Length: 323
Image (cartoon, rainbow, N blue to C red; front, side, top):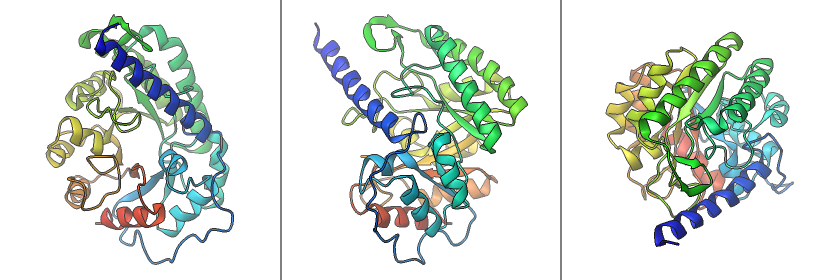
């Protein structure tokens, strides 16, 4: 076994572990975790969003698996208090709780088990499962008024979980994605649900959710061309500012370049996928101002992994993005 193979195997093992955690948390399948302290105060108020030019959302998984490990009820309480409009990447089991708090789910998981970005649309071996599962998610979204569902290119290996199985050429992977997205886009159009393909970074190998070595959609331009080739108003790009910064940079100009196909936005600080603070390099005020300039009306999901007090970090991030 080569050193590279051992490294790949370790990375896959880490991803499998986090996939199990995500599934347990409900990010992949809608199961509700329960980790919040029952009597914990929501916060002191008068922080977060006041201007409302950016529709802010909180990504459930990262605050459920780190920090105080909020359950869905706690996440909704905090989001509402800070002026957010959505809690996202939680499955249908969570949506009644969101509705109780007057919140939307900005984007739904696709329902794939485990880490949903491993077995993706680039590989025909998984098309039957991924397409069927995504269509089921689209049906649930349509019934609940959820307007977006996430999609992934997938890992580049012929067997997604075996780096020794050979690699799918980029052109072939793109063609496979386009074929699947044409079908999903047409299905989504009938239901009023948009499929958003997410670009992920492959450079950060320090943590299974900070980077995804082996993922084929790690170049923003590559993913954008796939979205364009799908030729559907119901297939868009999930522009994750953190992942874009790691792989491509030039964030503000790229927001303008791809303004017509951006369907959703994610945030996190780089390096480290932590808070949006002075320890990271991305100019989020400028990025948010660009979104306002281009007339972006979708959601911005706060998807950082808390490294300090989760409430304070989230309040800071939402204030920063409230341009």
